[in-house]
Length: 431
Image 1 (cartoon, helix red, strand yellow):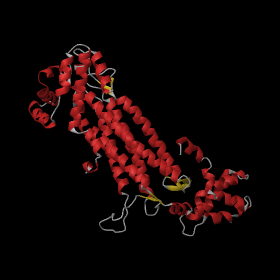
Image 2 (image 1 turned 180 degrees about the vertical axis):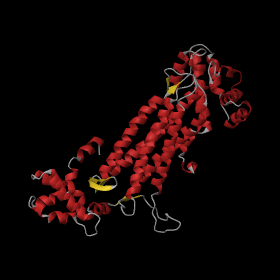
Image 3 (image 1 turned 120 degrees about the vertical axis):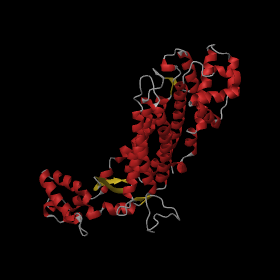
Image 4 (image 1 turned 90 degrees about the horizontal axis):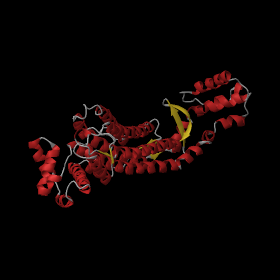
């Protein structure tokens, strides 16, 4: 099922062919560095660059015999290069190639994720602007609390995705690390200058102190950042699902002409995209746990992390990329129902304005406990009753009317009071 929704460009980055291409890029960069320092003939490097190639199927055939992926790859490359191939992989260990190339894949993946994240930011910003003044009820514990605007709710989403943008930009620098230091990382057969030159050619920086591998705290950080992004997307999706409930129906996923929601119930319009995003977020989060398990390798290296990363890294990148695509479409096409928001806001005669009445009574000289008791009595009398009307009860309560004028009571039920400082939030976000 995941393959069906995979966006081709991210899937391509995790294909076998692209992986082998990055391996070859690393090998050639090292050869160029070796030549610059006079360790191998420059003419041999030119020949390698002109002839070097690989066939993914042929690599697999060789690997089936030698049971070693890098050796299989080098054998196949040498079939193309010939005698000059003896300078390829000179002084290196397999992890020099594997880990440095993996960093190239991760950086390229972040480029695509950041591009998709821009789309999410634009979609949320546009919707938040459109509904800047669309009044709705705010909820805490799932219970009606006080008025907000739908734009303000979306402003919170926007702030969150902007933080993710900053995190991924930092992550792109953090993960751009290469390692050309040989077996157990001591540079015994390949000097640090070669690593520095090769990494610079690849757009990476040398790892500060590698063992035979780049330490997996970096890769765990990568997956955890994606998991955190997925968790935010899930938060948005869960909110949409809650607001789409039949008895709420303040927003709704776009439902296309001809679309069907249920094989049994023709009336159904289900939040399938939001539910799909919720499920995918669970997968990405599970990969974060596996990435953390990969940190504790034996001594200078083992390969217990390798089999895990072959699953979790492409999967986390492809899933997160698709989730960004889905949430963008979901927000762009979201159906918003202001009239239902107004209906829900005024449920039980505006009981959600209870705090304004409370504070106004206190301002008139009542002590807090007395004022709270007066307001709560009327609020609970209106709560969950078809005919319940908090505003009417407050307006006819002698203990209220002897302290407040009708115009003062009226002012308590003006939702605009709650929005007088929201402009500061919008200005911070540039909306």
